[in-house]
Amino acid sequence: MPEIDNTAGDTMEEESKATPEQARASTHVPLTEEQIRASQLGVLVPLVGPVQIVDYDPHWPRLFEREAERVQTALGDQVLLLEHIGSTSVPGLAAKPKIDILLVVAVSADEPAYVPNLEAAGYVLQIREPDWYEHRMFKGPDTDVNLHVYTFGCPEIGRVLLFRNWLRSHASDRQLYERTKRELARVDWKYMQNYADAKTAVVEEILARAQGDSGEQVREDD
View 1 (cartoon, one colour):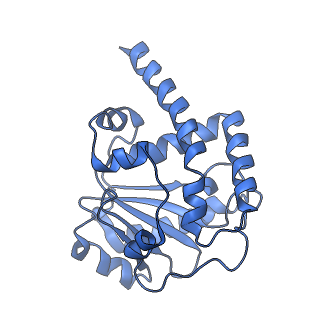
View 2 (cartoon, rainbow, N blue to C red):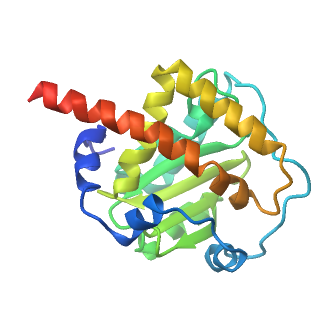
C-alpha cells in the first residue's frame, strides 16, 4: 500500500475552503426520503425494529483486519488508505454491530477503475452520492460491513479520522457520544439514515472540540 500522510492537519486546512459539501455539513438538514432513495441503489428497506446498539466487542478489530485483507487483495496498489472507522473502531464504545471501513482511492467517481474488482470479491455497491464528495458505499460479502469509498484528498477523510482518534483518547466525549446514541436508538426511526442524521449535532459538537485542539497543537508546533 502506498505510504501517505493520514494526519488530520493538512486535511483540516483544506476544509477552510468552502465547498458545497462543507456547506451542507455546517448547516445540516436531515435528508428527505426522496434524497435517501436517490442515493440508494436497489430497494430501500425501512427499519423493522429499534436500532441495535451493543456493548463494545473486542472481536471487531479482527473483523476489520479480515475485510481489509480482502479489499487489499482485490485492489492492490489502488488502495491509498484503508482504515477502521466508526464506533466499532473505538475501544470501549458501544456501537451497532457493523464494521465501518474507510477506503481511499485515486478517484472514487471512476467506478470502472475499482468497482468490478470489489464486486468480484463479493462486495455490492449500495450507495452512490455524487453530491457528497462522490462518496460510494459497499456492503460486504459475509460480515456486516459498510465500506466507504472517497477520493484521495477529500476533506471528509480527515474528519472521520479525527473523530475516531479523538474518541479513542477522550473518555468524556466517548461517553457523551455513547449516551446520545443509546437515547436516539430508543426512537422509532423509519430509515437508518434518519438515525444517523439525528446524531449530527453531537458529532459536530465533538468535532469542534477536536478541531480546536488540533489547531492549538499546530500553532504550538510552529
